[in-house]
Image (tube, rainbow, N blue to C red):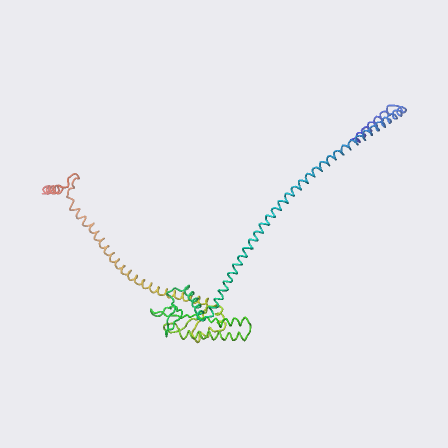
Amino acid sequence: MIVTNILAAAIIMVSLLNLYINALTRAEARRNITELLQYFQQGLSQLRGETGRSINEQNLLMEQRLENIRNTLDTRLSSLQKENNRQLSQMRDTVDEKLQKTLEERISKSFKLVSERLEQVYQGLGEMQTLAAGVGDLKKVLTNVKTRGILGEIQLGAILEQILSPEQYEENFTVKNGARVEFVIKLPGDGIIPVYLPIDAKFPSDSYTKLLEAYESGNPVDIDIARKNLVQTIKTAGKGICEKYIDPPLTTDFAIMFLPVEGLYSEVVRLGLIEHLQTFYKISIAGPTTMAAMLNSLCMGFKTLAMQKRSSEVWQVLGAVKTEFERFENVLLKTQKRLEQANSELDTLIGVRTRMIMSRLNDVTVLPEHIPSESTLEQVLAAKAVASKKNA
């Protein structure tokens, strides 16, 4: 702004100088130029002084404003920093509180879960101790041969009870020489008396246990001895069932040996004893799974026989129905003929006889409706007599 004023003043003075030079003579021009230069120098000196003072004042004012701005910024920054510190402190306190609360909750839950798991572990240990005691008792039970037989018999009875109805099998059935077989299945015979299928449970746990111990030891000699012992035991049991319980025609010509353990049944199959027992003793071997499959097959056979029996009964009923229907057809034909005859007679009666009666009644006078019913006959007779006289 100040520089612009100075330039404008200089331009004005130069213009005036040109005017003076043109208007005055050279001497006057020099004098005037000298005066103008002095005046211009004075003006410049004065303008320089005013400009310096103005610049100083502007500098002071700017310094004051900058100082005020600096003070304001410092104050605001200080307050903002304090507010941020306060909010950060509050946030830190809140986060610490929440973290502490969450940590306490999780720790309490973890301790609770650990205590529950420990309690379950203690219970499981108690159950395992009870189970161990039960296993020991079971081992004691299985050491007794008679008890082992009862165990197999109970398992066989449970399988039969689940699959067959009580009428389809018997327990402790007496065969030849008074021998009692554990279970027999009733099969349909040729007549009223059924044929019985003997089933006996065997559980040679001693031989089987020795074979398992030999497998664990890995000694080929012990394994071979244990296998031979088990084979001999199974053959002896099969021979005993064949001699005591197979009694045709009361029973079938074969029987079933039930082995209550799947592992024992698998070992017997692996040793090839099934073909030997079927060939020499007519004994079929069954485990729990194969026993259930056999019983299901027998149930299907029972249902097929029942359907065949029912089908013959149905054919008999259909034959009787056919005979009765023929009789019913004959009765219907006779009834139809009688109805046609009655219809013909009714047509004759309605046609011919009605016309004859109407021709005979043409001369009869119709009575008025107001005549009392007591004198109707007398009046009809009198009217008829009058009519006869007229005709005569």
